[in-house]
Image (cartoon, rainbow, N blue to C red; front, top):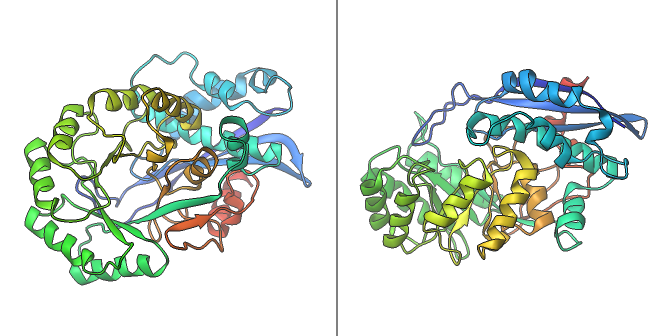
Length: 388
């Protein structure tokens, strides 16, 4: 048993949308395939992965550093102790050989992309959905395939006014979501409050709105927004300031009583630990959004969950960024609080397997081997095109 090839292709997910910090007109991602010599049902087992939106493709790092290390390693050194399957932890260690600590930016995205494909292949070789494999190895033994999801959108677009925002949010609510999210910080405070109020008027009992500033604010602006939004029953106020400005986050928590959310742009267990140590996060109400596809993958995410347990945090306070099926599998297997979803954006990479519906804010994952990419026809078409 061995990995015989690793393939990578840079794909465009360009769109005319923007948040408070960036536009997506030239955004890319890396799509990868980890090809093994294992055969199931007459076909080679291939694991697939890609990085989340908001960070660009990592093809050069994958091709120059991480792919060669894996392919040059002794095949047996990448297997579990029984020699019956791949060992994602050993493969992760191989990829990170000769890498210095720190400097987590783009490197963490490249490794996280490959790590996703390795776990997909590992679960397929085991003949299990990834969420079941994770529950058996690291969880309670039994996965809960029912996962909370919220609809992320509400971006700024050149031709979209208040009515366009209303129509977008109504479409999400009509598809079964109970929580919707919109962007703030790309307009004036007064304009953003008008946009928030326009959405709040649409909500029925049991439905909520979250807002996301994408790290745009300095401390005075973050606090000013918090004071203005204190009157609204928001699900959360997300990423007010720079993700590494833990002092800003802590001061915001002192002045804003509602739930806060952050963490999607922290790319290692160590950075996540510093947020918990110094960011003033409140374990009874705040949410953590670490995204395995951007932060060295599931191997590192498991270390992050162990760290959170040491500090008294429940995994149910984790609702990852990214809207991809990998985090859905982790949520179902390890008891996370849910997952982000992009109903209409960044396709075909986001979303759920075909036929999966949102019911009262939850989806139920089908029992597909691996992460379940094969159940989403448009996405699997892209993947098959890469792997041949």
